[in-house]
Image 1: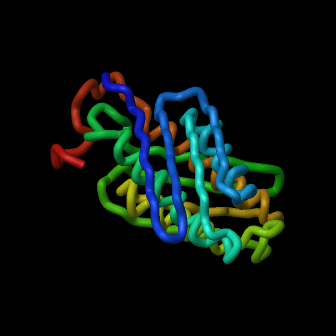
Image 2: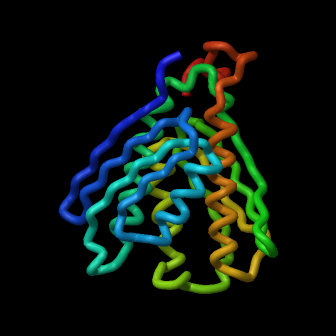
Length: 197
């Protein structure tokens, strides 16, 4: 089996981003993005997905965090698409329920080759510290479009907005881990009746 690693650089007038990713890592995360709360969430993906992530971003955060957050989602999606390759032998589908105190979220993912995002998080606050909760949609939409996955995100309950989104990112990491795991029963076969994904 080939190593499932990727390095992607993405430069625009608004952001300069590099992502190094290892799908079969130990859950190590290195982040220098200028968006501390997003880094806390990226750490959840690394730790719970056992995905090594090294993300650097220079963005126009003096305006706001929007471009950095969206473009990091895009670049992680590009790196994941590259690292997963032709998807032979992976489980393809992943899901997870994760609680954190009063909050509970469910994330379901399909490495379908078809971008789609259904996201229902009834945030109880518009901001978590300085972070605008609306930007999480931009992050996941960027990821979905470039990883070419179908992603369903539901926060089922919770009154603390930090807990709400942290359960989402932990569940996202766990769902990624399940979907990307190699299935020994599948061998090198394609997990699709179409023969391609």
